Image (cartoon, rainbow, N blue to C red; front, top):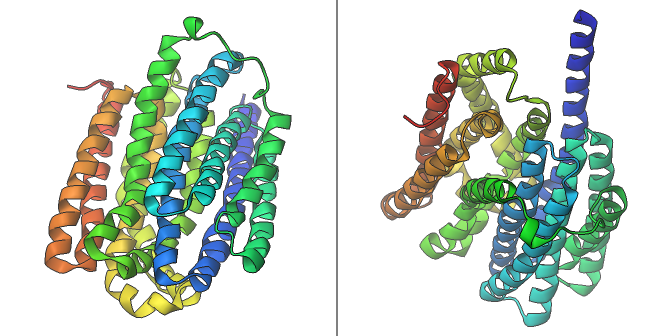
Length: 402
């Protein structure tokens, strides 16, 4: 028995390492190479537009294709492929039309908008396929998928340097990973009949997708919201300063994915142990991440976005506090997704985004960019408190709303 437990722990750690490595490959390529390169290659207005596109790209792909994969992972549906492929086919059509309209609104031309909408469509497929690999604990395939994506990004950067095609850095990477995903998943299996669609799956996807949309909206919406409030320079400065949060995500995002694949909602003893540990170490871990994040944030801006360093210094403290809070809430969310009703998370995230929007408008008016950064801290602090309350309820054996 002890040998099997030890083996399971070793496999768990190995899965975390593989998943972290795959995510690290992507973050390094996008946040440390691509975005600083684009920041130096584009003027301030065009770089701000590109930041907004990247934010929209992440919000849509994570909330739709990515979350559909997470729902399949949560329920461990390895056989109901026709159900998920049917939902995915509708999602892709909606994704393309919605993405096309948004990219046109950002200010890109028709041809560029069509190609950029296609990129977002392909990203939905990639993220769905990634969850498929995790569900089957094939984390080595996640790494291969990411390596192909990064290879395409490097090729796209090279093409962009000669052609200035704004879509090039993302298009090649998504195409490479798309071909791999088709070959290694059940995406080409026949789709189901809409009349036989499992309403439980659809409802779960809808609920979790809305929650994930709100989470991603809060992660990336700040880069969009700041534009009409404070202008182009503030968009670029804020993005440069929050680059560190993407590096911290090297730990949280992969761990989140592995936790989802390992947590069993029926194993109350194991879950109670995990919940107790989270509650015990929540504050210390948050503090440590904040203290580590502050000097690393300064270093990241100084190296990657030196042109914005003087403006970024004033917001580094609130940004670092936000990174610490986000680190812990991301880990807690992986537990809550398995153990509580999705409506509880939905209500919390609706309040979360309302707090952020109201705080960002009022604080920005009073304190400028610093106020905007503080509003992120306020909203994330609310999220952490709300999540901890849910953990306490789970520990006491009450997982539903009071």
